[in-house]
Amino acid sequence: MILKTLFKCSLCVGMATALSAPAFSQHKFTINGQLAKDIQGKVILQYNSHPNTYVRDSAIVRNGAFSLQGEVGDPYFASLQFSDNKGGPKMGRVSDYKGFFVEGGTIKIVSADSIGNAAVTGGKGQADYLHRVALLKTLNDQYRPLAEQQAKMRMERNMEAAEALQKQIAPILAQQEKIDSAWIAASPDSYAAFLLWIKTQRGFIEDEGIKGFNRYSAAVRNTEQGKLFAERIQLSKKLAIGNVAPDFTVKDSLGNPVTLSSLKGKNVMLLFWISNVFGFDSFAVNMRKVSKRFKDKNFVILGVSYDEDSRWREAMKATTYNWVHTTDVGGIGNKEAISKTAKAYGLSLGAVPQGFLIGPDGKILMRRLALTDAELGLELEKAVK
Image 1 (cartoon, rainbow, N blue to C red):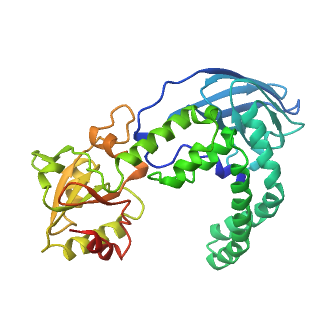
Image 2 (cartoon, rainbow, N blue to C red; image 1 turned 45 degrees about the horizontal axis):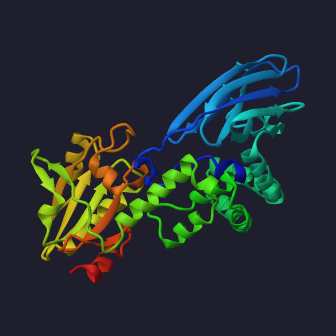
C-alpha cells in the first residue's frame, strides 16, 4: 500500500543520525484493543520511542482483547501485527497489519474481525494521519491491486509484465505525490505532515529546505525531529561551498596520522566511503577513471574508509594512482561512538559514500559529488584550481 511505505522510514534521512540528540521528553501511552471475541493469540508492536531508539513489544490477545503500555517522545508511526501463535506474525497478509501513530495518552484499536480492518483513535498525530488516509483512499484503491499483480509477476520473473504494470502505477504515484505536496503545504502545524516532508529532504539542506522548515509552527520545529533537522541545517551551512572544510586526523595503512590540512596547496577530492553498499562496483570503476584522469595534475584523492581493516586493505588494491588511503573504522554505525570526523561531516551508514572537492586554499569547491556519474571527471575539471 502507498500509505504503509511512506511513514515506515521517516527517520532515515541521510546524515541526521550522526548529529547530537536533543533532550528527550517522555509521554506515557496506553493502547487498548478489542478485536472479534473469538480471536486468540498475540499482537506485536514496533515503533521508535525516540530518534534511533527502536522498541518492540507484545501482548497476549484473549477473547479479542489486548493492552499495551509504553513511553514515547514525539508521536511516531508504529506497526501492529497479529500472530496466532502457530508460526509468528503473518508478514505477507495486509489483514494482519495496522499502521498508526503512537503518542501520549490513550489509543483505542477496535475491529469486528482483524487488526487490518481496525479503527484507530488517538491524538492529533493519528487524526492528521487519518485525514491523509482519506485524501488518498481513491488512489490507494487503484494502486493496491496493481501492486499485488506486479509483485506476483516479479515473483514469477515475468519482468516484461511487471514493467507494463509500472506504466499504470506511475501516474497513480505522481498523483499521490501531488496530493501529498498540497496536504503538506496546508498543514504547518501537523507533525505527521512534517515527518512526511523531511523524507524528501535528503543530504544537505539548501535554501528551499530552510524555507520549508521555517513554514512549520514553533511547536513542530521544537519536537525531537524538529531539533535534529535544525542541526542538519547548521551542519549544511558549515559545509557550504566557499567555507573552509573542517580539519580532521585519521590514520593511513601504516598507522601514521594524516590530516586534511597537510594536503593544503592541492586540489583534494575528499572521499568518505565503505565497500559494503549497493552500487559499490560502479562507484569503484568511476573512482578509478577520476584517479587516472587527474594523475598528472595538482590533485589528490583523500579516501577515508569505514570498512573493517581487512576489507579496507582488500578494497585498496582496486584503486590506483593518486589516492591517499586512510581509515576511520568504527567512526559510524554506533550512535554512542561516532568519531569526530564523522560528526564534522554529518556522516552515517546511510550517507556514505560521500564526496567533496576542496581547493588548494582549503575551501569547499563542490559537495554532494555524483560519485557514480560518468561525467564526474568533467565536472571536477571545471572546478579545480
